[in-house]
Amino acid sequence: FLPPPRSSKHVLTEDIVHREVTADHKLLSRRLLTKTNRMPRWAEHFFPANVAHSVYILEDSIVDPKNRTMTTFTWNINHARLMRVEERCVYQVNPENSNWTEVKREAWVSSSLFGVSRAVQEFGLARFKSNVTKSTKGFEYVLARMQGEAPSKTLVETAKEATEKAKETALAATEKAKDLASKAATKKKQYV
Image 1 (tube, rainbow, N blue to C red):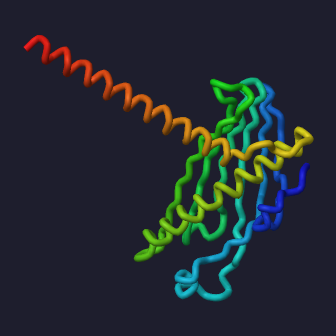
Image 2 (image 1 turned 60 degrees about the vertical axis):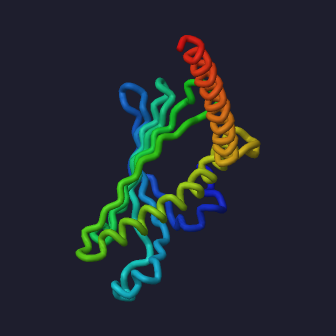
Image 3 (image 1 turned 180 degrees about the vertical axis):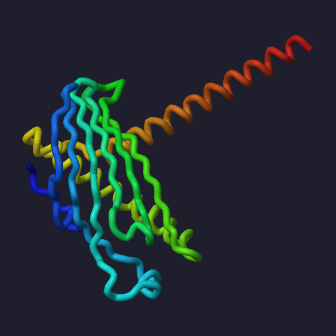
């Protein structure tokens, strides 16, 4: 077990509740996490001061060494009437470069508070998006420690490079399309 990275100061406790290896060699785990849960100022007016400022979260994970995937499903078990956040992440080997790991991350945010559910959901989604960067840094930290090195590039840096490459490719494709359209227009004029 590796200690959580410094970017995980909001994680107060992590406990493994259940762990087993299945007959088909998958590792199933359930963890209980306690995290700080700072409410936005506007929400403090709606709730009494004694509302707990920590949230309990369950995380189920499946590590499949045969298919080289890891799937996590996470959800809060308290404050669920106020806001329920569910997240599923699937980590797998990138099909184009086996040295890379890609993640598909999905989240569902819901609230059953009459009159303010939309605001609560928007806050939850914004908070989720800001926490994605922190969790990515934590994941990189753990991977680097497991490999005995510091990560050479963060996933954010890699994503920025991929975005730039995609922009360059799109620009080149646009120029090529303009060139082809121009040639097609010239040929059309020749036949008229």
